[in-house]
Amino acid sequence: VQLQASGGGLVQTGGSLRLSCAASVRTFSRCAMGWFRQAPGKEREFVADISRSGGSTDYADSVKGRFTISRDNAKNTVYLQMNSLKPEDTAVYYCAARMTAFFATYSDSYQYDNWGQGTQVTVSS
Image (tube, rainbow, N blue to C red; front, side, top):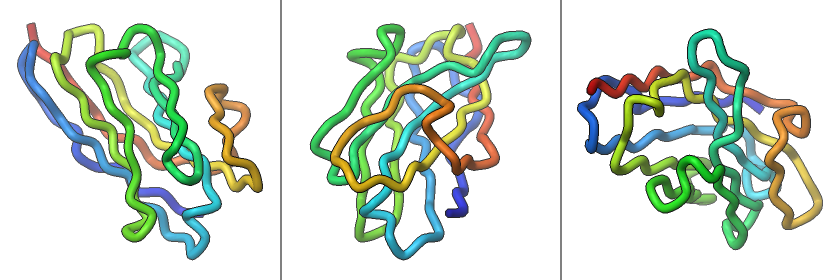
C-alpha cells in the first residue's frame, strides 16, 4: 500500500485545513486508516482513526470536537478536516493504513504497517 498525504500548509490560529491521503491499493475498503502527527522534538502521537467502512472513528482528546476524519472508499482517500487550529497543532501529519478483516479502529502506531510521507502543518499565533 502506497500512501500520499497532501493538504498541509501555513494557517493562522483559528483557521482550518483539510488533509487528504490517497492510497494506491485496490483493496482500500479493507484498510483501517489513521492519522498521526509528530512535532519537533516530540514523539509521534495519535490524532484520529477510522474503520474500514467509516462507521467507527476515534480521536485524541486534544483534537476532539475540532478535527473530523472521514473516508471515501470509491476514491481510495481518507481525509482529516481540521478546524479551530491552534499553534500546538503544528506538526508533520502522517497517514497510515492497516489491512484488516475486522471493522475495528486502531490508535497505536505499531498497529500500522503502511505509512505516507507526511505533510507539514504550521499554525501561527
